[in-house]
Length: 130
Image (cartoon, rainbow, N blue to C red; front, side, top):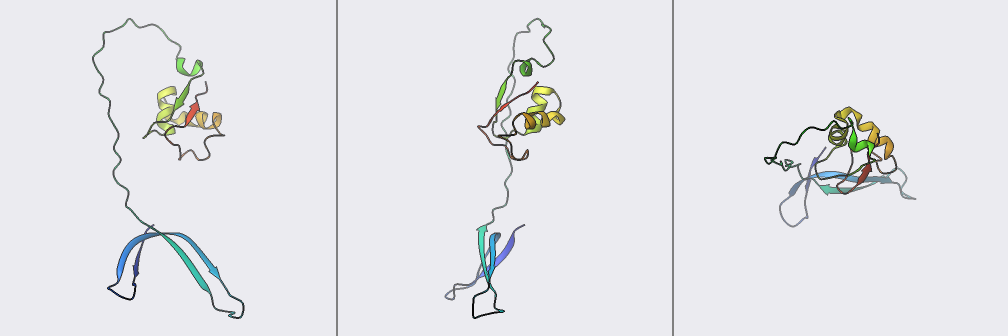
């Protein structure tokens, strides 16, 4: 959560900025028992902006006769998937399994690459298990 930092350089008017606390340390120096020295490090806060995602418009195609395919052909062939900007594990699971709740299968199969399921990055390649 950002905080409002108001500071002065001693020469001009006070300045103000929204910041996040990056680190904090408290020390006590020898010979000054009871005195605490507080060191803070700040990052300037920028409010999140709207996320935009490209929408692909389907083009007209000639109807092909439907061939009965296995229910999960992409997965049965041992496919991999490279993460694109805007992807989530839920979205990838829905694409391959038809159900976003199945994202844990992808996490389990790629535990060496996925440390936090909420943090995946464009360019990562995941194996998609059956």
